[in-house]
Image 1 (tube, rainbow, N blue to C red):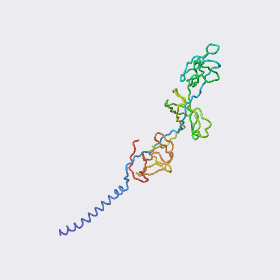
Image 2: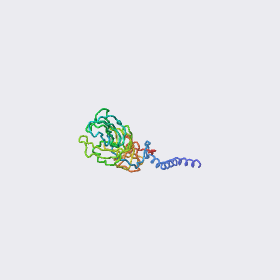
Image 3: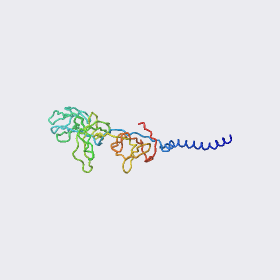
Image 4: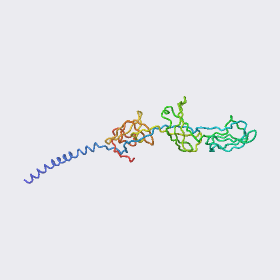
Length: 296
């Protein structure tokens, strides 16, 4: 009897073991299935698309010129230069004596500065004759006023307007402020370049004919922005790689202004979307990834 019971129990053991394994497998299968469907891709640095503002600018290159050059001559002929009192580069005041001349009949005639400014050129030479119609004895940069006379492509000149402010970098003088004073009404027919006259403000000592480049702010655009590293270029335009549900999605976007390593996204992307920070050809549509939010 006892041996029979033991035999029966032995026969049931494999059946119980099999049932237990089936139950364990049934319990484990959802977890295993979830694990099988979870992305197992490489870690990818991502960032969230954020709002930013971009200045709409026009760049103008040109030369520094005196706004008004005042020529200084004697008012009668036959005078001889007896003494020169100033040199080119000197700053003078209105009414200041510039040279002493002697007429044929004797005596002295003083040549004075009609305006304050800086002596741009001087041809006055002791012993030479001066004339009211000949070459000027002196040329003065009136009131020390300078313009950057810049060239602008015709496609951009309509974006400029009088009194728009500019930031100008001049070779040898650094950066100065400016403001558009006048825009020429015509363009050169061959180059299709127009002229903009930008008044240079401040008291910087400038060199006539020095090269300068002005950046003129013509407006501002605010919207979604991304770093340039997040943009991919292909023959059909520009795209970004968005991470959604831990998988890569490619989205075509329209870009706009650029500044400081950032680019304006005008269409195709919403604020807050998660984007691959350094897009590249190694990531393709549908690839699984483990997104890691970039620190900045």
